[in-house]
Image (tube, rainbow, N blue to C red; front, side, top):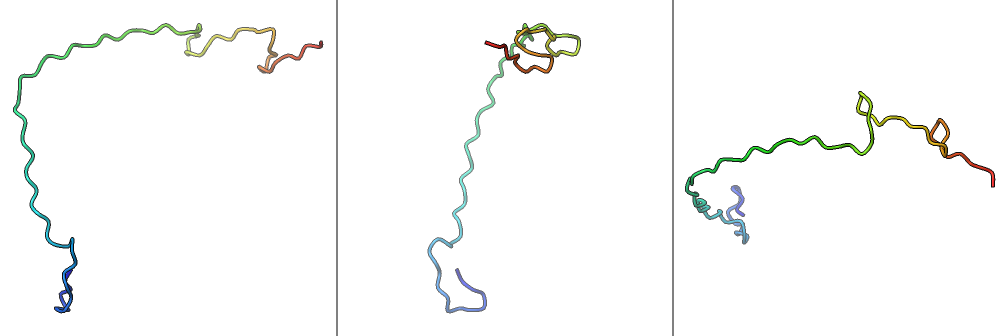
Length: 74
């Protein structure tokens, strides 16, 4: 790399001007096929839901009202 002010500097390897890039070959515009429209399908949910989409609350004897497990005496 040469400094403009100093003519005594030497050229470092790898700093020469880059070779021009070759243009990429263009693909021919072939006929396009028609895409098949995909149908949308309603998936069945694993649990029943209410109007908001949340799972319906069901009472479980093993859980209290907060969702914590009920400790039964032995």
